Image 1 (cartoon, rainbow, N blue to C red):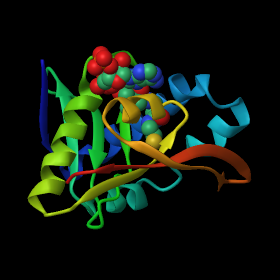
Image 2 (image 1 turned 180 degrees about the vertical axis):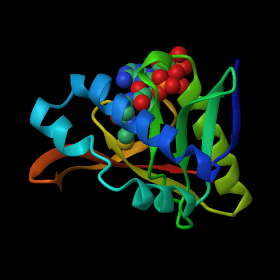
Image 3 (image 1 turned 30 degrees about the vertical axis):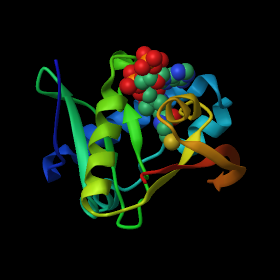
Image 4 (image 1 turned 60 degrees about the horizontal axis):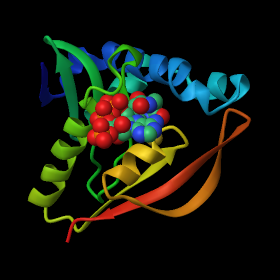
Length: 154
Ligand SMILES: CC(C)(COP(=O)(O)OP(=O)(O)OC[C@H]1O[C@@H](n2cnc3c(N)ncnc32)[C@H](O)[C@@H]1OP(=O)(O)O)[C@@H](O)C(=O)NCCC(=O)NCCS
């Protein structure tokens, strides 16, 4: 059973683990090993924890264990959407996105936007996001393709 709750400071290590594993074991089908290595890094867990706590962040749990997380910045930017490799395709990201969207609407935001990976693009398209542009971003010396996408909430 999947449930949603607010992020707590004690979740920082679990979210880092989900982030690293979902890139190494899921997004790795769309990026080459050097790109995966450059992306899947949490060099400073304190900085990671500060970032997660700096905006509303939600945890999806399966049987009370964290299996995914997402967030919402004040301008409508959805920065993170990661689901544990062993819990793909169970609706965890759908539940997270529904929660992010509800929070955005409550705040009166008229759009959500994100930079979707090659892996996540079909998920966001299914949820009503449209691609504004394909782009290459530099991470630790590697170029990674992603897509600027947005969803109108009007
Ligand atoms: C993208 C991601 C977050 C989706 O999580 P998920 O919990 O498996 O998604 P859901 O189970 O809620 O899927 C919802 C729908 O999107 C579809 N979907 C999800 N990922 C998909 C993919 N890669 N390709 C095609 N469809 C996909 C599902 O089939 C499902 O469709 P349905 O409602 O018709 O059954 C997850 O695959 C992930 O963590 N990827 C690796 C990390 C990553 O790239 N994150 C994004 C960074 S921007």
